[in-house]
Image (cartoon, rainbow, N blue to C red; front, side):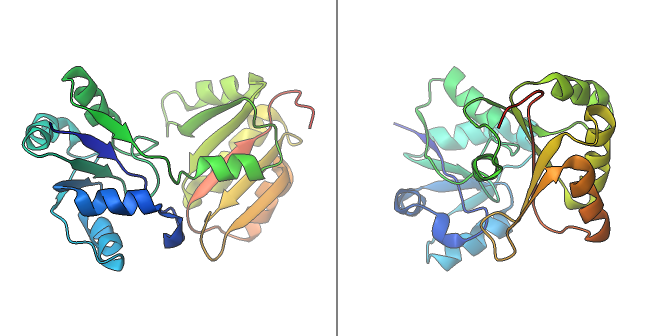
Amino acid sequence: MAKLCLVPTPIGNLEDITLRSLRILKEADIIFAEDTRVTKKLLAHFEISAHVLPFHSHNEHKTLQTTIDKIKMCELAVLVSDAGTPGISDPGFLLTRECVLQDIPLECLPGPTAFIPALVASGFPCDRFAFEGFLPHKKGRQTKLMAIELEERTSVLYESPHRLVKCLNQIEEFMGPDRKVCVAREISKIYEEYKRGPVSEVKAYYEQHPPKGEIVIVIEGKNAKN
């Protein structure tokens, strides 16, 4: 019977991939990838030969049923994103939902995702938290920021490096200069970095040191007691 397996891939250090993930990638009849070039480099590093096809945010609506048809024609299909776990701010939800609706067996392996190490290493309470992914660029952004301002749980955001200072400025505007944040950058890579403190201070640092790489912002909950 056909089966889809969601396989997390390293967000930085290639040693983060699990032995089980490597075995599944080797056994897959077909691998659907966010960017086939990125996935082929990963496969080549581990000397894995596989049939790789694209499945990304630009084509997932158009190719959803075609992808389902291809899954039904093989024993084991795999979905990967460029880094991390498919479906977490990456393509994957639509395909996962459709497999559930069509009773196609589905499995998701445990593995890398950026927001968990950022949350745990932030120093903020992580027994309860709200993961918001990327904030809307325009419509709904202020509404979301106002909701986060009132959130008593720790909040976690993804952000691009060229928008980081703008986002920190908005956090300061909506939540005040003393709301504590932690910016985690390049997790599991050579230049991994954590900057913690009042948002005004963290913003000032990045105004002087323009960031590069993948960014996670962790925001202390309202009235949190650390």
